[in-house]
Length: 65
Length: 139
Image (cartoon, rainbow over all chains, first blue to last red; front, side, top):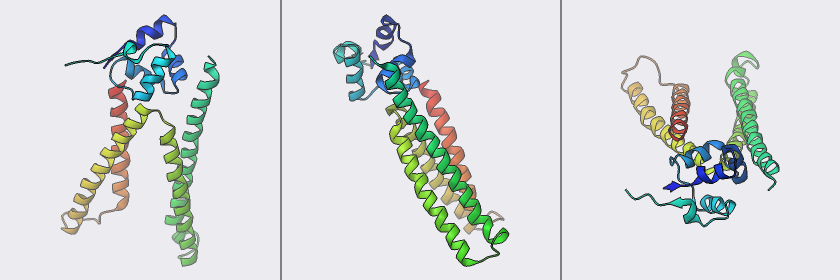
């Protein structure tokens, strides 16, 4: 699953640690999500979308092989 | 948004959980040493003291299990997944190699008796390696 987390974060001048703090997860988890190595659960994905006041599909995009 | 307050709450809770787990684990190790070495070095094989030391060790062990469960619940979902994978690998390796080790002893292939401590060491090393690899893979 692809995502725009890094771009959205950069637009707000937030560090990975800042975003991790907003979402109550570790910085390592933010890094893994940004790199596409870890797909967040639906509740976390909704939490991320809500934080950026976007729809979930505006943050995450299905990656078809 | 009050980031610092929220972050400090989550991070503080995790740090506290980790510290609690470390304290309970240390206490368990110490009571294990007491129960193991006590009969020979402190109370000269008195059964009552041995039973009390073992009961204490079990009680502290229950506390350690509870602290571990609380620590795991406090982790985020990625950390929980890495922990789950590591524990699964550790359980599998411990079971397969543990029984193989026992069979080697039963069949008298190895000269010494199979010791439970060897299995514990194997499981601890497996857990640490699989945890390291799991975290490295996601970083």
